[in-house]
Amino acid sequence: MLPSLTVAENLRLGAAYRSDKTDLSRDYERVFEYFPVLKGKMSQRASLLSGREQQMLSLSRALLAAPRLLMVDEMSLGLASQLTRQLLDVVADLPRSGTGVLCVEQNTKLVLKKADYAYVLETGRVSHKGTGSSLSSDESIVHSYLGQE
Image 1 (cartoon, one colour):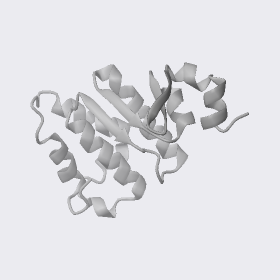
Image 2 (cartoon, helix red, strand yellow):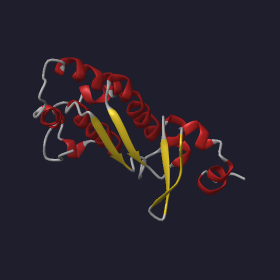
Image 3 (cartoon, one colour):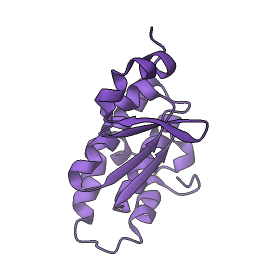
């Protein structure tokens, strides 16, 4: 998100280098379905948005680029759990439309609920891997990463 630009300019920038612009209007509508608050703030400078709205704008701008792979790093950092869940719901929906997602996240409990497949790293090495549901029920994962006995 570029703070000196308006919401509309940020979104246009996200779509600027798309190779295929045929579905651009559909993608704008999808972004506004995910985050309706942005539609009413198109002329507002991004720096004046709340932190929550700035995160929505950043993700929307990325989606308008129509990536084949979206890489998300620590999406929950500094966010209220409700917004984190909303953003994660959007990200978890992307593979249905053909966009792969690589999500790096320390909020293991939340991410494993949505992940098709996950890797757990310990000191830079893969210590566990599998479906999100299998890892969230693995006793060693539950004890070490989910904070449950």
